[in-house]
Image 1: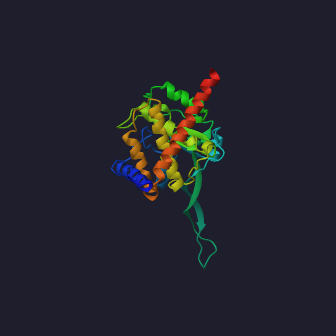
Image 2 (image 1 turned 30 degrees about the vertical axis):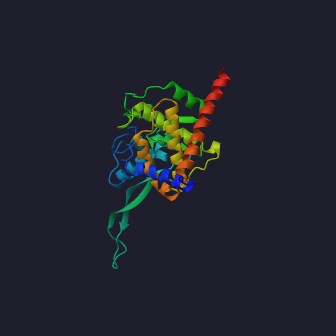
Image 3 (image 1 turned 90 degrees about the vertical axis):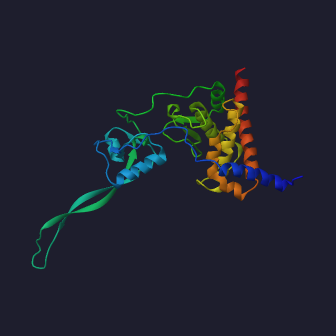
Length: 297
């Protein structure tokens, strides 16, 4: 009969085997294709290094729009950069007059030399009061409402915003950001509906962390962050199963978890602990739904 130590190791090895043999993670929603970043005031396209800088910033933040401007330029357009937003540096060159002199004379011919300068620009998604002329977005919403899931999400009373092209729970402001439903396209193993609710329930599981005194990692990739991601993905799988969204965990659940193999290799109890925490989070959210049902009765 296996010892307690053996049991932990057997479970961990089984999970690791599944993770190490799966493919890359599939993102279940669409986003903007690379478009040339433009200045919101002049309409001119950025050039050179600035194009790459703004592409990287847009990708990392999930910005859907390609319009950028400085704080002053947005103000001139009647828009306001939101407090706390960070700008992206762009380089530009100012031509300076430089007088050349020789020993024989104090007068000399001037010449223009380029002097590099930096400005900080903000994307249209970082400001209030700006209405783009045209926003290119998918028109079809392939997500079909699932009443049970919508009821559970509403019962949590979590603040959820649908914007951008990234999904995350923000501990500082205690809110959830999801891509708009119409961006969800699904994956090779899930429909758009399954993908949307799977992602929403993943982030909602993160939302339970401070309410259940569960440590939330502060730095992407550290051990606490990895453990929390494991809890969130397992929690989403449990809730999807309980709500009838899907009968069993999908292959792309494992693909997502493949990025977090390290923590399992370093701690044979990690998966069992994460599963316990995920069950606790699932029960907590289902209890909130029951609370609202009792209050309405």
